Length: 467
Image 1 (cartoon, helix red, strand yellow):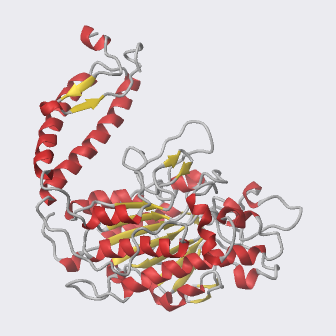
Image 2: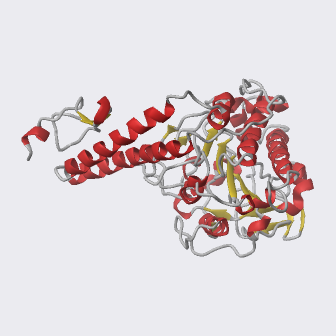
């Protein structure tokens, strides 16, 4: 073994020009240490939104069923929204509600660990070793991100990444690494629309040359590592390459003027202490980012599964206590109504956002912005944290060939559909009597219509032609 490498310690760096340095990860090998121009009319956009803790699903003989069961009654074109979703009625012809879809690899991961795999379909497991994979939004960002200033906008109410199986972001890189989410509207706005100081170009040039040298040194080091360390090192280099791409892209965009937008109506210092206005501000920032073509990919994780973060207070918008408790108190008097009222609030704000896209003409193109924007709004939990029969709404994308104005019920008669009677096991303890359709079938359909040439994603078995 190389004597110099054998004495490496965790304070050792790969060094490039100009004093630029990159710290190495710990390796077992050293055991003593640890855009292109494009016509606006051809823009295609994707935004994904996550609702935690499942949705109201009272049994059919429950008095609350007609008003507060989340899934519509009826099917195909002949369906009726309950009070949970009736704010979507004005957009009926612009959306499809889906039931009976879930990720095969995650159908036994119940409880508070569901969000991690909503956009990835990965087998994250309920305990033990954890490994995720690339998320739907990042597949599309890799396809289209070079054409905008920001490859993808990653947002959540709680911010950051959270923990394995306790994610606070919906977005995961190709390596499965979580991408930190921003939760402060002012920071999102600054990233989108505020030009930074004039020394940025010089710093970018220095960083680019330093990274070139560092990557050369890194490749020479790799051959001396063990198999496990090579895997760790490859993940490390994936992060470096991501930084390199950002540097290259920033250099191309540094002299491009930022778009000017009118935000007099927007309180950028709002916090989740004012939950309705906060959520409206987050949706508005996505709208502005899309309208100015600052990005074509966005995710917003509205809440985390485990009720111990900022998002647990969003139910204050409708005068209710902690959000997570609503899903546990459905057997109490008025429990289904309370949970349904909160879900209705979320439907109101999603509807407001989608309607604004629908009423805005596509810049220099035909139709509305919604016609060229695909929205996925839903959860990897249904009744009481159950990882089957995900509640899903797909909206927009008519210019991509999507057909709407329907409720596609893939659950069928044999699927678990609702709450549970006194004395019966909770839903996640029940065996399924039939398999859901893989949600990745829908994801492949979405990617193909967005222009990504792919036939596979997360174990799909085909596509969904009905949309």
